[in-house]
Length: 294
Image 1 (tube, rainbow, N blue to C red):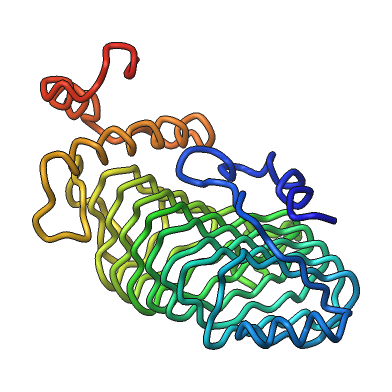
Image 2: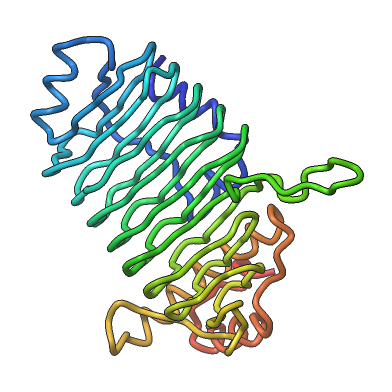
C-alpha cells in the first residue's frame, strides 16, 4: 500500500482534507516493520520501532530527522503512521489495535504520547503547530481524534475519545459512556494543564485558559476557561506575535471564517457569535472581493 492509498482510505473521515486539515501530499519514503534494513534506516532517522507485528508501515517525508521517537506496534497488524518533515518530534505512539492510522504533520512537537486502542481508528495532527507536552488517547473502533494545522499547545495537555472504563445502566445494561470523536480546529491555542474530554469540538481560532476541563463544544474565535469550561469572551483572535500587524489580523480573520464555516457544515457547531460584524469590518479594509463572502 502506498501513502496515497492510505490518504484515500481516510478521505471520508470527518474534517481530514477540508480547510485547516490538509492532507499530507509531500514526497514520502516507505518503511516496513517486518524488514530489518527498514528498521535500521528508521533508527538512523531517530525513530525506534518495537513489536513489529504484521504489515505495519511507516511513511516518513523526505528531509525528516528527529532525536528520539518511539513506535510500538505490539504485534498488531496493518497499522500505518505518516510523519511529515521539517520539525522537531519527540515522544511515542503505541498501537494496541489493528488497521489504525496516524498522521503527524510537520511542526515543533517537543513531546507527544499517543495511544491508539481502537481498531480502524484515526489520529490526525496538522502541520505547522507547536506542542509542548500532549497525551492523546484514541479509544473505540472507527473513532477519530483530529487536530487542525497552525495550533499552539502548552504543557500537560490531555485529549481523548473515550473514558477507557465502562459505565452502564443497572437495569438496561446499556453503556452510558461510549467513545466519540474529538475535533480541535486549526489555529487553536491550548495554554497549560488542559483536559479535552471525548466527543468535544473546539472551533478554529479559540483559546482555552490554563487548568481548564473542556466538557462542551467551544465555538471558534472564543476565549474559554474554567473547570468545567465556560466561554468568557467571543470574537477574539490570537497571534504568536505579541503585537500582530493589521494585515495579519485581516488575513487570519478571513481564513478562520472560511474554516469555521466548513466546520459548521461538518460538525453542526455554530459559527462564532458576531462573525458577520467581523466580516463587515474586514470588508471596509477592502480585504475581501465581493464574491469572497456569502
